[in-house]
Amino acid sequence: MKHLLKLLDCSTEEIIGLLDLADQLKYEKKHNISHRHLEGKSLGMIFQKSSTRTRVSFETGMYQLGGQALFLSNRDLQIGRGEPVQDTARVLSRYLDGIMIRTYAQKEVEDLADYGTIPVINGLTDFCHPCQVLADLMTIREKFAVLEGLKMCYIGDGNNMANSLIVGGLKTGMKVSVATPEGYRPHADVLAFAEGNPDFFLTDDPMKAAENADVVITDTWASMGMEAEKEVRMKAFKGYQVNDELLAAAKPGCMVQHCLPAYREQEITTKVFEEHADEIFEEAENRLHAQKAVMVTLMGNQEEQ
Image (cartoon, rainbow, N blue to C red; front, side, top):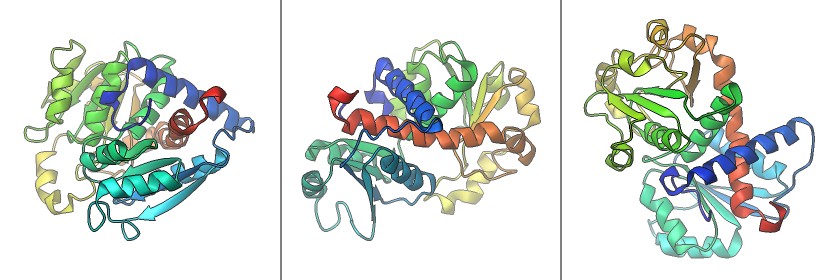
């Protein structure tokens, strides 16, 4: 692996390898075993979209691995405005050992990787959210010990989370069912990837999607940058709430995941959220461990791994 731009680029073996390393790094952290695999290395973190979890988890992870993280806001750096992205990529490649970028357009991430000479990690784009889904898969595997054969159900907007969950789930042998309203479907590239796979099911009926699910996942109905559409979306997603009625269709004791921030009584009820809070915040913690695995894999000295 040279970069983590999207899970569509990753093989099953690469995804499982990252999850195995994340488990190991989590174990070592919990048992105070030092793992300074990135001693002396620097990660540049470019934020065109702000975030609590992404910044804190990458910065803390880099520190725990012995390196340093540099925060670059959109005030410090305007990619593609003023200085062309190809020049930014080549300049940063001379200073840093890796770049994490959280932005709107997937093309910005791909261009950074194409023109730079250092690893690029996608911290989120409008198209996909690979780091979050690695954390989700890690959390699911911690509970069930396997991924293959489990049924994952996603309810809500066919957004970057839906796109990455479909790809990550199918590539690790899970059955994936998705319920989205018409007009809010996952990206065409992802649907083309999933087309013809007997383990993939797309519907506009949340109850059908949730049938016998081992894991139910949802996300906010209006992602960052979509605030103007909020009222329209509230109407479109009526009936797509994760609540007791929906969970009754899933397997007893099913897992619930949410990548946060959660808007209680919109995409998920307060009752369901609080009943599954331990799972949801374990998922949030696992962002740290999964991203450390990505950084070690991409930025570490190969002989150490």
